[in-house]
Amino acid sequence: MLTEHHCHILPQIDDGSSSLEMSLEMIKLMRSQGVERIIATPHFYAHREHNNVKHYLEKRQNAYKKIIQAEPKNADILLGAEIAIEHGISKLPDIDKLRIADTNYILLELPYAGFQHWYLDEITDLSYEHHLTPIIAHIHRYLEYYSKAEYEEVLKLDAIFQINNEAFGNFKEKRFVKSLIKEGYPYLFGSDAHNISDRKPNWDFLIKKLNYSYIENSEKIL
Image (cartoon, rainbow, N blue to C red; front, top):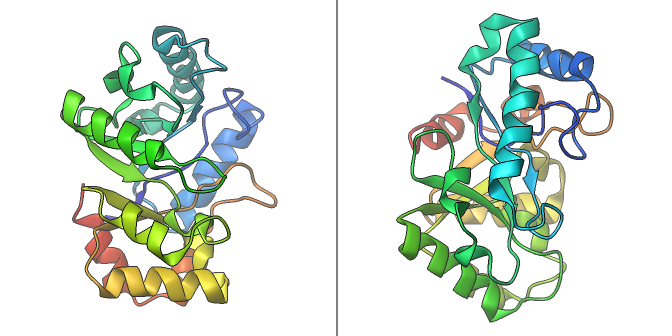
């Protein structure tokens, strides 16, 4: 089974799909590329949602309903969220309800800024207080922000590291993620697709660039 672990296919809920029609086209494209299981992970920014997880869940469910009402065969899509690490996120009421479906996995996005130890404190607190396993989204995207030593601090987390498919099209990022895989860190792949133009589903690219055994290994995590 080929799983899309990170994407923004739900319509009009974040900066991903801008319409139901686009959502259905994105799903169709994923299916044509061999994806059999899709985990939808719309952005969750606590400050934008006024710290209201319940309201966010209602919006997410309404967006999901639009997809399955249009095409009932898509009812097997799993729901999650891409949660931005912010001060106090681990203490937010109901934050554990943003885990992926009925698993104990939760997708987290680090800030696009210089390394701060409080990022790791929030992730650790979230993990232990709610009995969740963190998945760190697109771990390769912070190369311009973190030093090698700071990256090592992040990699010490009891976490899974998600890799965007496009990382294998960038020399520096490719070298980093291949090293991560070689060293035995748990990893997952995802397209992080947002639309059908500049950030479209790209599983065909990953399959072309990477030995399929690496993809099969990522499928064992969930």
